[in-house]
Length: 334
Image (cartoon, rainbow, N blue to C red; front, side):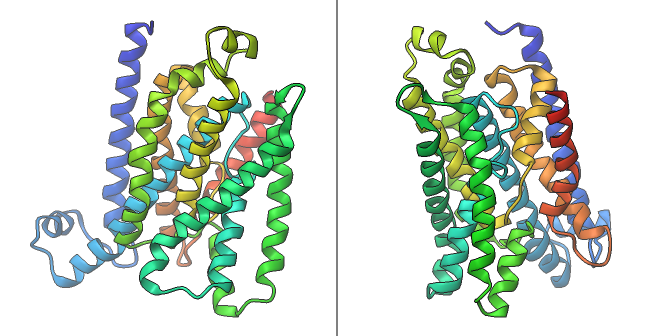
């Protein structure tokens, strides 16, 4: 049973997280190369803005904000799941190769397959998912032992190796491609959020609508997977089946996110850690907070990157500037 005081604390943190998100969304809608003052922003939201103001808000800024928020949520949840099933606090979909697998699949699809403009938006998440699933399957296969089953430490180490190998494969793939297509892939690798239109939201949103409730429903199983294997087996958990199911969930979330945002790492590492430090390791408590913090962190990174200097800094680079030192801190602490 969860102590009522802890539940109350979680609700307060959720409210604060929502307020942070709302504040950042308002700031993101108002600032940019063509700024909208607060009073004009309100007027535009109420339908009284000029045609130019409505175009800036509804066709450029708002879709990007929503996409960034949703992608950050998906990456944070994916990281929380991976940390749970591997019992390793350093697990992240970008670090262990899932993002790289999705990226290689998307690069091959984009560079070498004829694509119709109408189907491109909806095919990219599917292609990314297939590439990530294949990568996840290979990582699982190499990390699995007949004698001892899946070794969480091996899963992470092999994933890091796959990430490095797939990054090299990406360079080989794009080296012979046309310049205009290489430019897109290069921006994707840097984490430059490119899916900034409403159809991309339609492509991403169903994954979250299905997989967030599913993960919360399986949160207690994640708690049990965090215990020693004899204890988990003793309470009736099918360890391998649960790990595979939750691994597929994490892969799907990461693939759906990076297919429209590019190669973004560390959100899945930072957000769960921050959430655990606030309310503890119970998945029922920290996962909702991690989801909101992940969305907020990526939104802040993109907002700052778009407005820090005249040239846009990709959100993936902004996140890495924060995430890499945090990753080093975790390594030193552990």
